[in-house]
Amino acid sequence: MDIEKYIASGILELYVAGSLSEKENEEVNAAIQESAELLVEVLSIENAIVTITAATSKKDTKHLFTDIEKQLIQKETKVIPLSTPKNNWRQYSGWAATLLIGMTLLWSNSQNNKLKDQVASEKQQLEQQIEKASNNLAEAEKLITIFRDRDIISIPLAGQQVSPNSYAKVYWDKKTKSIYLDAQGLPTPPKGKVYQVWSLKMSPLTPTSLGILDTFTADTNKIFTIENANESEAFGITLEDEGGSASPTLKQLYTLGAVTAT
Image 1 (cartoon, rainbow, N blue to C red):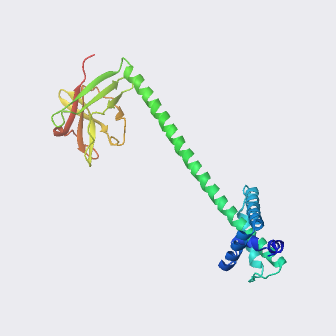
Image 2: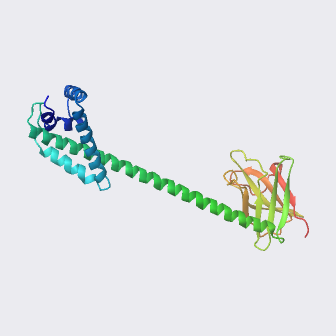
Image 3: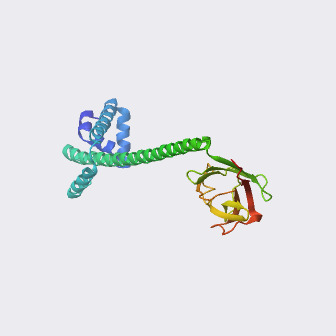
């Protein structure tokens, strides 16, 4: 075999581009096994394609594939046998290599876009976690300040007959006319039920609803800020149907605590 003529024929470029028939591939494989010079030439062709791809991968490749496709359509389609003259082999192998590069660039661009989207999504999630952690820290610091205020009235609410193990605690800030309810000691309410908080006047017994804890299950801290402009003498928590009740269901009274004289 004349190695130089074989290399000059352009068949190795087609072999690298994957454009040969199965029989032709077998013939080239056999030739490569017999000649180290042919193997070196194949590796050189593959390296050249990788180098060209790396040099152009940073540019916009969308128009590149479109141009390649248009030019291929404009070219006359030919079936080229192994005995095709040198120049025709070179022309065909050039288009095949160009198409291979174009497809590689498109794939690379697609992967880069996916990676950018993934990084952007992870960055957004991290920012949300940092913001949530900052908000939780600020809220915790605020509550610590409130609970340590000596003007804040602390009222423990003990468990009642329906739920003896339940407990809660109210921190009443009369200056701001609000209470901070720590309801960690209450069990998760059944489906279709909510806890309702009551301000009580004892003589005569006059309950005033302070609202329902409709976010009880979702709230991990179980600490709720509630407005209270009443002259409360006690606080109670009942279990009611969703939406709350106009008056407390005393059979479902979970906790109760009286305000001690100060």
